[in-house]
Length: 155
View 1: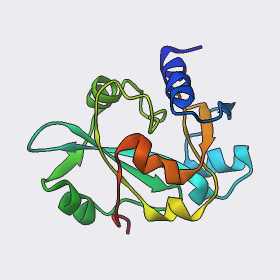
View 2: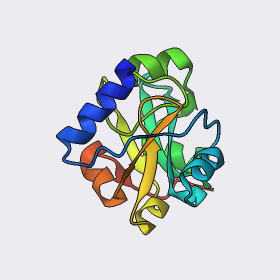
View 3: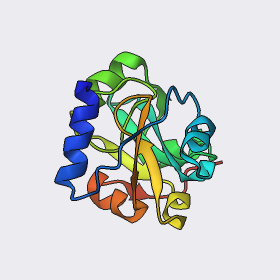
View 4: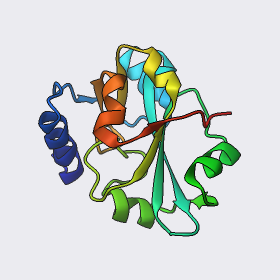
């Protein structure tokens, strides 16, 4: 088991959630993950990371799989210009590789926002620390577990 997957599993259990981690193969898109799980694409909680230009920190936008982050809305929420986060920043701040960024188990605290579309489902699926693993959770627990602010930031 990878260190990232083990860290997410630990965070899941510490949060009192069921350890329902599932291997889905190499899911390159939210649709790939949804097809593997047998859910609708919006039940996939994508972790989109940007670089906050003023601070250099990573910021996280948890969005429904079929939605896209609107750069203008995201910038307004962050209160500073946002740019592309490179793999090194994502790895150093979260501890995860691109494609496997989980909402839980980050190495460092991260400012986060949550797409309200995710709250419309009983269960959503999020990356479990690798591009090949996901776990289910009730999305209403996400704001509490991640300190994410529910906000409109999608196109």
